[in-house]
Length: 192
Image (cartoon, rainbow, N blue to C red):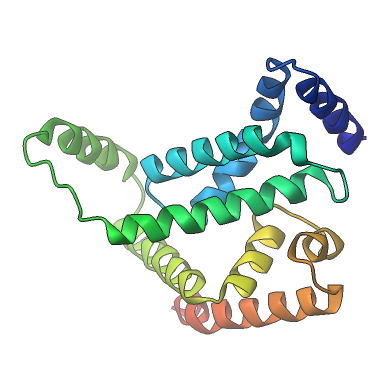
């Protein structure tokens, strides 16, 4: 059903109705941003990757043949966009603005307001989150993609296999290995 409605919207876009693209953006923007967040934690990077991905999707939508699900197609475009963006960011020199302390102060004040819980609990939660981020960041692209599609997007093994162009057994194996790697790093915190 979803695929059919997407195909109808795509046909409208192909026939010149550029406004129809807005409905695709509204529908898929949260999912595209979630994919972008797998490659960067910076909100500005996530917004940039999401925007670049939609620009590429718009420019290439006339080439979509419908051989795969539309989400599979835009997922691939988004992943490639994110990888290219992060690669380009690594080649750039960082820009530091020492004159705009007001944003930093606002962030710190807001952050303090959120720390109402027990400090020990917050520290443990932050350590677990940092370890989880580190272990996921060090995984191969195949393991990271499989585990994030399963755990964050809630996709089935079949859907993941379609996106990753591999057998379901391979997806199961990758997810198992990713979970094992996560368990090794996170279990010590759970026992504490």
